[in-house]
Image (cartoon, rainbow, N blue to C red):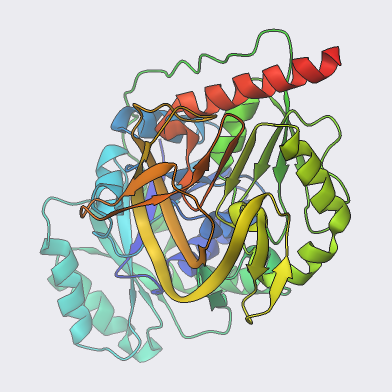
Length: 448
């Protein structure tokens, strides 16, 4: 099995740029590719998908046990010549959710990206620190981002001195991706993305030792137990409508694939541009995203709002995460401070704050049984948002690993709405319960 992981010293060091450059270059060489993102991020996999025209998958060792990680990696890379895994933040960041941890689980060699801007001799100190901070580790070498050409020989010498591999460098260039408050802007928002990707591939071919990367990518196959999905579907095939546009685009590829594998019919729709949800929908997923950037257009699409209100008031099983949760409020404050009426399902307003609220991994403890959860559950999830809510949302006890906790989320027999994002493989019962409710809703409507 051929695989290589790309890590970095920190967020913003160039991991996504280098990963996309490598993917584009390998694609041009006609290799069959699969791509993955360590951790819960939505945006970086969108860039991977734009490059290889295939879904990119998350591998998150906070959400999943080792066996599930191995199962998902193998399932989603079987037909590939090589898999590229992009890390999260810095190599050691995230505890069990770090690339340090993930690389051990899936037995992947790791190449580290260092942003060399403003450094010369200190590059060696950074290299030595990461190589020795925790040992053993899977780091096999380095790519030097934003390195002046005149320092290339020094970088090669440092690799020899530290007994690690040199895999090339990237000079300063104009092909970087723009960013905003949740990280990079989404791939669909970059008008000249293909131009940038072609430029990055050219730089990769010129400055990165691609053949050497391929040589070091081989590793052993993974041993794991197959996972029985135990789908609740028998005869009735439920249709699940999933939002997917610039405002609501945070969908895990594995969540969608799991619903399909369990037998659901998936239909995508746009709250921004469509007039109605799919007419035959038996379940509704309102994804996270950036509704605050499109608040006026969402508010003006009253036909869609009325369609969603009618469905939810009819108790269609609904998952509304973060941006979808915000959309269901009476009012939403956009990124400029303007306030717009929204769907009016949830009493209250969502408003902008000046800091990240409850950033990171969380555990959800339900107050009562509901659509997705049982009172005895402990559900792994994550939050990442600058917006807050005035709504009375107190159906979950939400806890961080450092011991801090708060109340949040709205959970009823037909609705989950809240800031926490869910990954179905963290507890397959979430998907099973949702599908069962979709079947009941569909069969009830079929009789009527």
